[in-house]
Length: 200
Image (tube, rainbow, N blue to C red):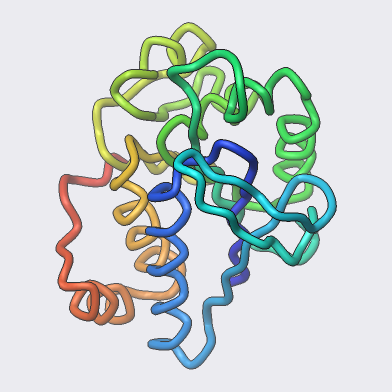
């Protein structure tokens, strides 16, 4: 499973680091069945996250090289400056996410990354979730908001706020690779997934 985590200026640090570590450990625990990396919606560059962490992202947009794309959130509470609202105003990332889904890539989100999916038209009429503070916005954009840490609607998987990225990644490892690998990753992280995954 080839995983790409999309980074943009203003992205929340925990949103992308948590899933990155889960998927990286899953790769080690499965003889390389999972490969994960960061991408941007454009060319490779340095991304500055919400709390100032700078990440050199070596790969640009390449959904043809991914089976799964993870869209983190960040910057929801401020309408100006970097974050999801700047990405929505620019329009490039939402357009590319919509196209990736049409090409058969599984697109997932955590935290307010779900608002970017909504802008791409991917959550309308679909069970989904996001950060507690953004659920009203997601519903206003047509999502059928479910109060769960992870909502699995088959080809759309979303998760709630910040730390729920761990649950999202563990669930996807379990779903796509197997429970044995997911359990080994939980053991290494000394973390037990919280809550029930909502699924049809």
